[in-house]
Length: 379
Image (cartoon, rainbow, N blue to C red; front, side):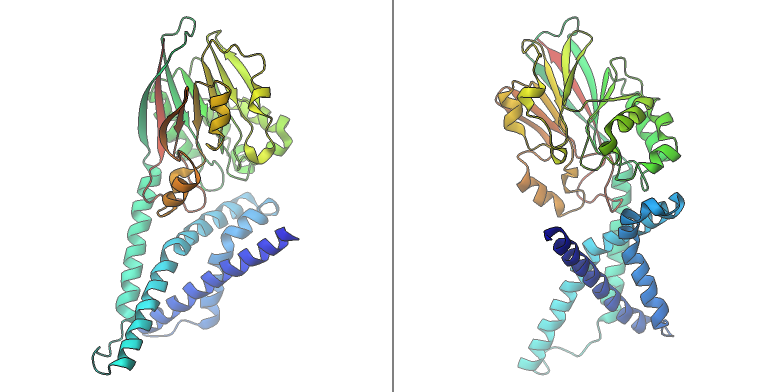
């Protein structure tokens, strides 16, 4: 019952925002074009843009893959309008209301100017600038480096070069070409160990299989292996054996509430995502020797106290995207104790990535696409 109510309210809000943007855009087009745009054709185009993303997500399984990919990309760009054009239009309308109020209170004080053309052009140029900058920030990843010390022996290893990648969101929007660029950058860092901290797949597993992205992932070169955990968007995880087999073909070993001993030197633990009913961490760690280093992957950085209590030495996470588009980072900063970067709590060190890929709008504003390199020294 509550789910249906939420869906209805969400669709009403989503549709209302789309109608408002369409209405204000129609007013601007009427002011700048020599001939009016056919009303029916115009609103059909607006409806197509607004419905593209929901249809690609909810009905994508029944559509040809190319159609789903096209709808997802079109709808993702439309979502950027919801984030930035809508507030700009509301601000303009607020100013218009204030000007009308001043005119009523003091006639003649404010000249009677038609600002539709100027304000519409300003919003369009600002929106174009956001799209250009945001696309660049999302497609040009930075490498963030950390130097850490774990005061435990790790067999023959004195140092470890770990590369962390989270939130690749491979699927209808982020495809094989961009994945190849990621693999090349990762291999250029010459990692000993590569960790994929969840949301490897973006809600639709078909593009990963159909576009043979596994062949690209298999190119990652890491002597100690490539490991991954589940995130909240990893479609296919409901059929976990098949999902693990598909990732294994890509050279990725998935750890789901389990641990492995890596080269007899340290432990690597993978937690199930909190959205999937994970086991208690204390139970997951049964059989682990606490005198040796314990590295933990947990997609969402919101169970920090459990890691500290369990004696984990290093936890790596993603999920937050650091808000991805401003002002989203103001929200993630309040939700998570650490939404990006480094934190030490008790005897546990935490590193949270803002993610390599994107969800929804394929842009980043106020954040950057990121690959994390962690240089660990063992004492």
